Amino acid sequence: MGLWLAERPLVLASRSASRCALLQGAGLPLEILPADIDERALEAQAAVRTPGEVAGVLARAKASAVAGKLPGRLVVGADQTLALGNALFAKPADLAAARDQLRRLRGRTHDLHSALVLMREEAVLFEHCATARLTMREFSDGFLEAYLQAAGPAVMASVGGYQMEGLGIQLFERVEGDHFTILGLPLLPLLRFLRREGCLAA
Image 1 (cartoon, rainbow, N blue to C red):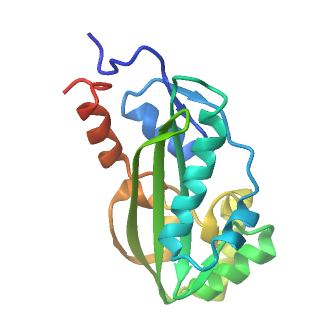
Image 2: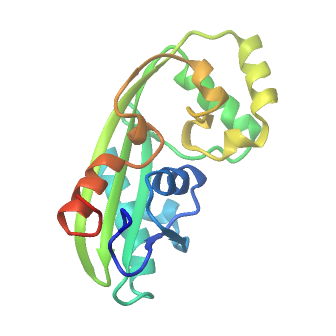
C-alpha cells in the first residue's frame, strides 16, 4: 500500500514550480492544470479585503476554474500575497520593477499570506491561510545590482522579486514563519486534512 490512497492523482490548479515540487516531494501524485483567471482583476475586486483574504479569493478562483472541468477530482488552488503595511505587491513585470520592489522592501518587515483551497466540483472541502513575516536586511545598492544580475529572470517569477529557496535568501535578516508558507503552500494543514479524509495513509 502506498501513501496516496485516493483513486486519482491530486490536481494542482497552478503553474508554480515550487508548489509542484512541495506536493510531489511529499509523495502526492500530481496532475498540473493551471487555472486561466485574471488575477489582477480579481485583486481589484477584492481590494476592500485584507491581504490574507485576497490570497484566499485568488486561491478559490483558481481551484473553482479547474474543478468545474474535472468532475469528481480533488483540485488544489493556491495563491500568495505580499503586503508591506497596506501596500500589496505583485510579481514584478521586468527587472526595473523588481529593483524598485526590493528597494522598497529593503530594511523593512513584510508579510507573506499563503492561501490554499481544496475543491471537488463546486464544493469547497478545505481552505486555509497562513502568514509569515520576513525582514530584509539593509543591503547596499551594489549588492542589489549583483543580486539582480545573478538571479536573472527568476526575479520576475515570484512576488517581491525574490525566491527564498534560492539566491533570495541572501536578502534577508530574519524570517518568522513556516517554510512551506513562505514557498507559497501551507503544506502541513493540507496533509492533515487529506489524512483525515482517507486520501493519505495515516
